[in-house]
Length: 95
Image 1: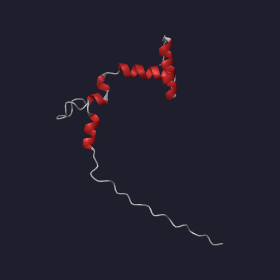
Image 2: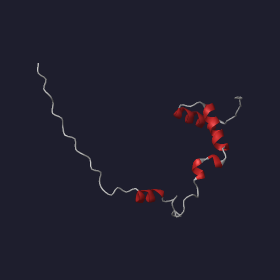
Image 3: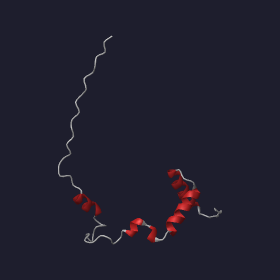
Image 4: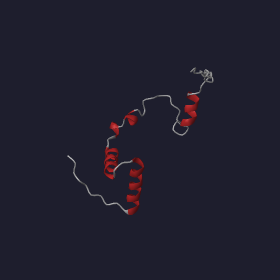
């Protein structure tokens, strides 16, 4: 069952909220409901946070140099070979 809640915002916060929901095509009510759910959700319900600490042997500066380590991990050894497309001959129509 949904119940109404009245919230007072100052002009700056209201402007930011209106701009934010307009960019996403949401209503203010939807944005506030989702914000409340996100802020009050226990951390054990977050699947990403549950992965924390599961992997041993990661570099201690991984969060600071993530892009560097990602590029080291996923480097193509060879240029991808693509077949060149041959131009199709135009067919002539006979009448």
